[in-house]
Length: 541
Image (cartoon, rainbow, N blue to C red):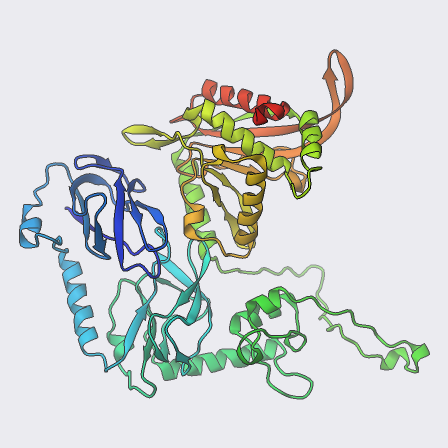
């Protein structure tokens, strides 16, 4: 049965999109995960992938044309399927499926019955692959006034934690997804309207693709109060003068996990409210216990440490940590990669003496800082231009060779791993690569990367050398065909010109998808890569 695909909402402010280019044409086979088109939003040009498989039967928006979000973009179905009835009934917009009609009618009925000025806000789709989101923290509470442009909440997607701003003004009347909870895109997130408006029944009657929480605001307030009461018993929330300390629930949780007393933290939020960043950046001040020579006996000295209960050595504890959206997506994608792509690994040892000398000379130039990882990335970019089959993607009916080089750089963050992408790496100098990697890695760790900065890689580099790991194998970052694992530089005896001397070497491991890369092709790439790294001057020629 034919599936209707509409213009997606690829950014939180997107109301219409322009099809920059179609990567499939009518009649082409489409697999789940294939890139259908490049769509230009109000913020960037993004790849739009298919969540369905079949044959592309119809294109509703030609390349270069602009259409509103939810306009008919394409129809995918079985080869030869008759879709004339769909197009005849609705020439400009495809007829939705019966379930969609029913959902639309229910939503329309609910919208029509809303009190004047009341707006229902749903979980936004903040990235092209987002299917559900987690509310990391609310920056407004029920009863707060909200202006257009105010940040309502921080929402964790499958790629990053992003600020979600309000496009409406009024009073926050209801919160449908509490902090730490996860819900599907389009689930009921909040209700905004005039202060004092009766919204009884709106949450229960609201229909969406997700499973919104349906408790009314009054019930929610009781739940929040109950939660805060429990939190107060765990985390100190009163200062020495008895005044209540204002802190967000997420800040309280982090403080509890880290054993930080909130009375010692200075808040940067409204009215001195302590927020997540205040706790994360908190550095405890040195505390001095008065000594006996200062007129106080040890028995009467102030104790700042909290006594810990005795735990028998044989007693075993476990801890259950809720999976973040990032952790879930990492698990899903790596499992898919490992079990769909036949991996094999090629390992080569590289002499690093000349690279070490060259780096020292380069870094002697004022305002220049280049790492060994930057040199590896530059060498990869140049080697990929000579061996484009490594820079490829597997498709069911073809192999896509990329003649542009976009290298993804694996960065470890608190919740797992992200891969920011250096677009057109082959055109960058060593210093440009270094500057861009530092910028992207820094923002990755602060969860400030845009989704578009983590898309479009054609090859990936993962480096654990800084942790002393000498050799390891990585799982391919789909849809790439290969990933390079970089180990630590090790000083050891080596044979040079028939003599045993002290040298510095580094192990490189290339994981390849055997569907696209044969062993000899991977080996030739590593040989070229080795030549560039061992003779850095060739990268500057």
